[in-house]
Image 1 (tube, one colour):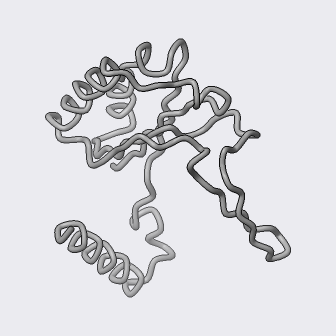
Image 2 (cartoon, one colour):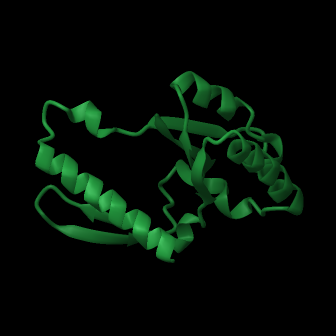
Length: 147
């Protein structure tokens, strides 16, 4: 199963966090363990919300853009991993090993969310839709290999 692991941060504190060499070294060691175990498919840290934007789709059909920072956000996604694991229990055990004190201070939250797979929608996915999804996945992989 694929799982997205989101590193949660506090919106009010995001500008106060300055990555240190120690943080990079500690997270590098953890990422090395994930890669060595064969579960890490990807992951990155995200820039502060001040560098981002939100696209908001209103009920009446209006679309607006809100530039960061997102002052109203109490929690933000500061980074993520995508893991391939055998179970949610395995993902949780790996998440418990994540360095935390040196990374975000006293409290850090990792949110783990399994991805939907086509099999989850077997009663609604036609063979044509499944093939279209597979073709998109092949094209994405080809683009990444050509990059």
